[in-house]
Length: 84
Image (tube, rainbow, N blue to C red; front, side, top):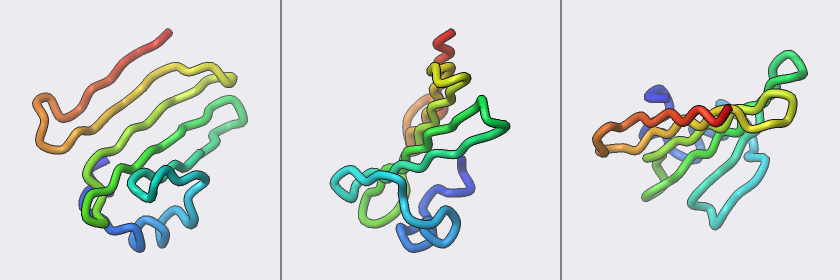
């Protein structure tokens, strides 16, 4: 996650391409599929054109399995919630 922090929208587009969905240009969403049964939905939150927060929702067989959050400057910065 820390690899993407403070990257700009342009930097992110170079890495991932166009976002799968946008929310008010403050949050971009990407979906990544692995081995056909796993999907990761990655949300990047921008402030002043730079990534400050990241959220990953992991799915198995289409069911939400785990959420991983990175909140810049918070304590703790990483939060993991296992749903199953």
